[in-house]
Amino acid sequence: MLGAVGRCMLGVTGSGQVHAGSCRQVHAGNWPVCAAGVWGRRGRESSSGSGPPTMPATCSACGTSPAALRRPKTGHALCRACFLAAFEEETHQAIVAGRLFRPGETVAIGASGGKDSTVLAHLLQLLDQRHGYGLRLLLLSVDEGIAGYRDASLAAVRRHQHRSGLPLHVVSYRQLYGWSMDRIARHLGPRNNCTFCGVFRRQALDRGALLMGADKIATGHNADDVAETVLMNFLRGDVGRLRRGAGAGPAGGEGAVPRCKPLRHAYEKEIVLYAYFQGLDYFSTECVYAPQAYRGYARALLKELEAARPSAVADLGHSGERLSLRSDLRMPARGTCQRCGYVASQPLCKACVLLEGLDRGLPKLGIGKHRRLRDKLQDGQPLTQEERRRLGALAEEEPPEEQVPLGELGRDEELWGKQELRGPRDLDF
Image (cartoon, rainbow, N blue to C red):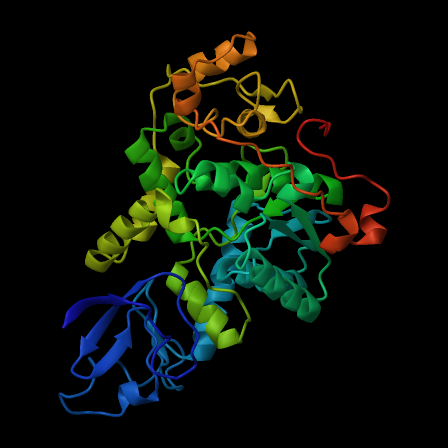
């Protein structure tokens, strides 16, 4: 029976490690087999028709060890050692071919505590020692202020930091913006929370990296993330982001600090397998605000495409890299925000527009097509009751949240010194 969808346990090993998100399982008789390719010992015991589909008894790479999995990316049956070696070598080749790093650079690894960033931090530290990249690696986390979610994921980051010995630095929305995501969600309602969080997180990573003296930010985006982004940009007709491609080549991006994606060719399922075989500790619970995100629809579509054609994930990523647009297409000019100095294509950056709406009690001011109303406010004209309703006007204002002292967020005194972490309204770039 094909097509049963559920929370997949990694194979039949009884490990209890759960996949991130839902994944497709194949049921052969009474034998559930993970579509990620893991086959436990029970998966090879039966030689009769009652067992799961046949898999080679030995690894197709070394020819001696028992095969432990079938790679989702290539379909090859590999043992544990050969899979780990292949995954690490492919990541190294992606770093070298993409010219992602230079010797002596300080690289801030965006650490969320999830599988992708945990595997990325482990791999960069391992490959730096093995191949002599000459990098100074740091962990950089963002605390969005989501109760019951971010505190648990930051605990996973700190456990990894304790094992790896890498310096860890945490910046928070409450420090930078005076708002937490939980408070924003109470004002905004169930929709558009990811818009605020995405804009604020991108800036928070840049600001944290600048204060740490980082030359680059490395994020754990994988091939599935890249494919989802390409799909979303097509569906939304976002020409600007389509032109920027899928993040291939040397580190770059639209922020103040160059970014790179060393795992952009790695399938999500293989990242889960790598973390499982290496025994890495990570946090796998979905954000409480994620079910309302538009990306979820692109993710569901991608899973259906992948079930029909496993190469669809890689194909979409390659399409994003090679997409060609008309040369006479007018693109927004890159400038700086008049208020905070951050990178922007308008007089005010998106974060400042969103914050202006929150501070005015009009949380939807920066969302959707409200340019006329924004211009009206900028000119000092009062809004009608209907216009305020359209912008999500609050019935009553909440007092601002208490600012978190910097020392409570795991600051490294030696690196940060006495430097004050300032918000988007007064931080100079």
